[in-house]
Image 1 (cartoon, rainbow, N blue to C red):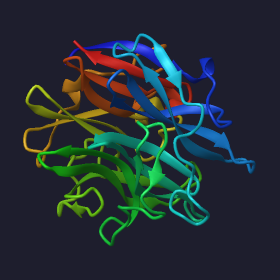
Image 2 (cartoon, helix red, strand yellow):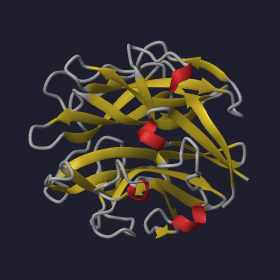
Image 3 (tube, rainbow, N blue to C red):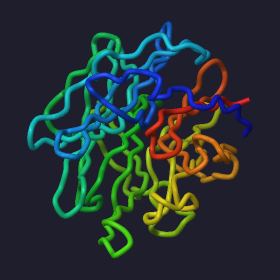
Length: 317
């Protein structure tokens, strides 16, 4: 595939973020509306104790992504109550149209003691065109199970062929800290199906994308678009350790194809979206969102430092 990179599309240093958030525009997720493209992203607010809370905001673009039409003044949903699965952050946030509402699947974060975090997937709904959302309940709709014991999240949902399809990640293990690295996590991409968007049946095989870096490969943030008769999945992947300081181990974009939504063929080399030297995405490319618009595939993604500087766009040619 051939792409035209549009560069850093939304630079957080050039725009005021809502709700006292100070950095990051992570996991950009597009929602095509009647007169604009709304891109939801996750940004960070200091919690007063030396850590950060992740909130969801949005920015509106014209259909060519030439102009910003507006930025949300507030975050779209407050964080969860004390002790709930999304008390300490929401990242990422996956929206789509459903009948007269807009549904969003959240990845709620809650802090732990022995490991940094636990995650689960929640469901929120909007009746005001996606400007604000309300929870369908205080708990998650997809969480850990005996076979998927930790870190369920990054859920991307579309209604296809009469059912809701969810692509998500689940953790397989935590790797204990050593003298060089803090505790590290390993996670893979799975798939689940639902008739109502609330009750989900996970595939028995769970893992649907094979590893290319070995058993400790980390796969994150899958998204899927139907284009030219094929389902295209774009995700990111990295090594479990060393990814923060060694670019060769950091996030890059992965790619898989399917014709039946059941079996996926991994073809990373055919995607053709790579890091560029001396650029905002020279060290990593991560947290992608693929979607079709104007007869072309589009990929929103983050670059260096996990979206600290904003997000960019690539358009297929």
